[in-house]
Amino acid sequence: MTNWRIMTVDDSAAILTIITAYLEDSEFDVVAAERDGRSAVKRFCEVKPDIVLLDLIMPGQSGVETLSRILAIDPDAFVVIVSSLGTEDAVHECLTTGARSFLQKPFTKDDFIEFMRELTKVA
Amino acid sequence: MGAMFFGQYLLSKGVIDGQALIDAIELQRKTNLSLTALAVRRGYLSEKQEEAVLLRYRTSDADLEVLCLESGMLDREQLEELLRIQRSDWVRIGSALVSGGHLTREEVVEQLAKFHDFQRDADRELEANFKSCRDPESVKTIVELAAFHLGRLSDRAIKLQSLSEDLGTLADGRRRYAQKLVGDRELFVVLDLPPAMAVAVAEGFIGMALEEGSESAIDAVCECVNIIGGNACTRLEASGLILRPEPPFSTEDHELGVDASSSIRAQVLAGEFEIDVRVFL
Image (cartoon, rainbow over all chains, first blue to last red; front, side):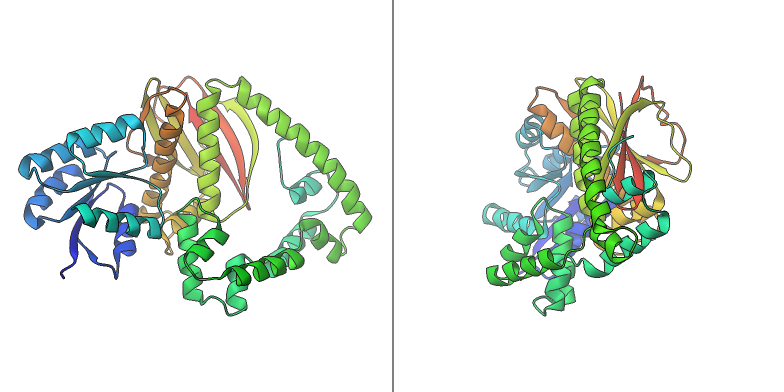
């Protein structure tokens, strides 16, 4: 079976590095890592990842805007929001916009891998 | 005078001199081993396993003991043995000062009693300061979250020293890491850190060595502020306060460059570092 192809989007290079390190030697391949919403939308069209891990709070185009644009291109896109903000308000907005799940930062490697494996059951 | 560690208290009272404190801390460093370091020494963990479990510890809110057990790296019997060794070998600062011949046992006992009174008064003063500052709930939530995350990531003991209102000027040689929270009200979460503390936090966060003042180190500390700010919004929602964070940023400017009518400054000891956690209101 081929690995799941993941695109990560976060304005923090540290988070992109951590996620890539956590997914090393797993059934997930990080095929693209972008630091802003606009580049993420463009890159999404090029790589067509299985799962997009998208930050919510980013300069310029926000996570919710980016989510909407990706879904406008591909309504079946599997986008998951990864954010330090876990208010009901924020989670509700993301899910009603079309995000499939929500993961709050910080997280451990074990929790993250478990979360990713749960996602694959529905992706 | 705000809260402090016992060694610092003895120094401030002139009971010991700086060299005595350095000697005692050095003895503690050599003798007091962390749970994972003890496990490596006993052959229960390899250095690589230790590194992996510590990385997980710094990026989670779980206890180190729980992580060691859950990951299967240690079994319960090994863990209990290690905790027993750790308890029996652990040298407190007072004992280290006695071992170094700087104080007698009786002097340590006498000073500890005074320190506990001092500590109790300092804690009461801090609590009163929290209650009397503007927007006490937001300030307390932010300061507590900052202390928790900074201590865990830098692997240093944290002690909140004092809380006061000031002009919010950034001290020389420090960098400011900040995030604006908007919504029901506007406020800024701010960390003023010396470079060595910033890099310790960044390395703890990302799990690799970084250069002081490098773009990667600054970015990692900004993400820590983002976690503190985002988590604060989540926690404050329970009190009916709706806030949302904006992207974090870093600056070396003496002013934050924003309109804020006051700065609440929490002076925090993080191991050997003095840092400021601020909330601009």
